[in-house]
Structure formats: C-alpha cells, structure tokens
Image 1 (tube, rainbow, N blue to C red):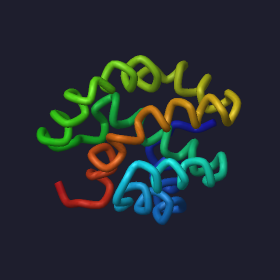
Image 2: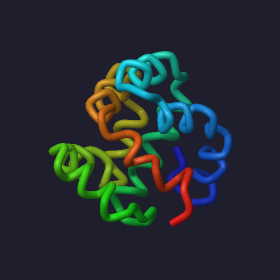
Image 3: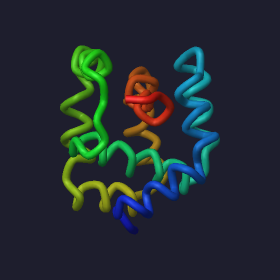
Length: 120
C-alpha cells in the first residue's frame, strides 16, 4: 500500500468519476449508495485522499474547514487517517470497516472533496 504523493495522484485521476459523483451528489442517500457500490480500490483512494487532507498536504478553504469542524467530524478524521500507520491499518482492514468510516463522513464529503474539483 503506497502513500506516496505521485501514486495517490494517479489513483485520484483513475477514480475521478467516482470522486466527482460523491462531490456533486445532491444528497446523502445518493452518496451512501455510491460508497456502498464502489469497489475497494475506490474506497482506498478516498481514504488516502483524506489522509493528505488530515495532514495538511492538501489545503482546504477556510469555509470548508469551518463546515467540517462544525459537523464534529474533525476529531474522527484526525483520529482515523492522520497517522500513516492508522491509515495503512484501515486500508488493510475489511471493507465493512472502510465503509463504516466513510459513511460517517458522508454529510461532509462535498466540502472535503471541494479542493479536488475547484481552483484554490
């Protein structure tokens, strides 16, 4: 499992359609359905992206950070994907664990994915 920037960038390009679908989905139900129907590679790509967000290597706008902080999901993100060892453990874990984590973040996926689809 690689967490190199170049490798993750290639994964983001590969899974751009899936990520854009999550970003543009009009409601949580359609995002949840997309997450449940995604294969493990796409879920892993999203988790790796969240790792770079949590580390500050991918910058997010202040208003999006405010939405994330006010949703009380910031602690979940930092606790689960900030440390490389924890990310690798999550990536190697069962699909159910990955989905459980990502579905908890479902309400704030558009603000998290904003940086991917908009100029900073």
